[in-house]
Image (cartoon, rainbow, N blue to C red; front, side, top):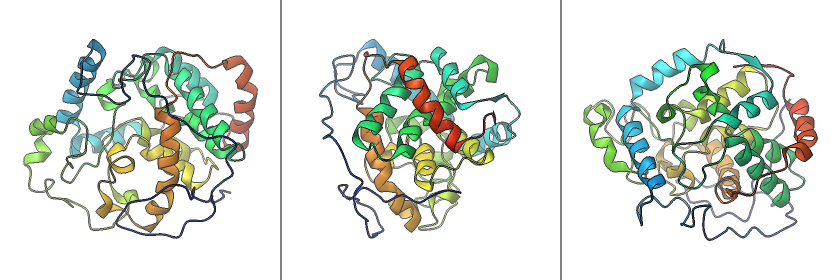
Length: 304
């Protein structure tokens, strides 16, 4: 059985829909985002003073934007949502990420399990009474196991990076928008209007996103009867949808339920983005706490 959670009141939600916010969860500290990432540049800096890392990220998005089409997403759903790739626990999946470095990330070049614990511990410090959020921080990127050799080594352009709706026009706020020029869907009248194959305020549940780890992990959670609250599922599914939670784009696709969860997504993003550093988390010291949460909300073994 899942439980609802109240959205944080401190956030100012800008969307096409309004909703009544309930009291903010108690915070024990004030979050002060760092000025620079681990490379000494601004977070999500894709344009100024390009480093070798940033040039690699730009090439990543070129391939991503040219190939993430509506038809491609349907093919990936057909392949991955059979859940016949592996049987393992949540913690085992996290250990798989020791071998994966996200090629799309201009802010961090460490194994992904480091980022998971950094995010989770930031959520824990700011929202100590919201254990569901701590676990969400820990597992939000586990879908990146698709890139592991034991899952078939899915190319990272089809697994990581910012996500965006397919089946409708690409909004200008999507990072590296220029690379959509060579995406076939941009030139297909079925897909290149604002609504495309969707209807106004249809709800994100009915919208296909570019294929990646967000959608895969969300579907793994559903398949394995995860009992985390709906807000956690929403965060996992859309945490890479920066055009939405950073720029308030695509508001015409949202429904009232999306609007209720968006406040928590925006809150989560602060801890996802601004905690990336070269200071490693103490995995051994934290394992028991997160194993306890995993046991509470997940079965011992999951199908992937």
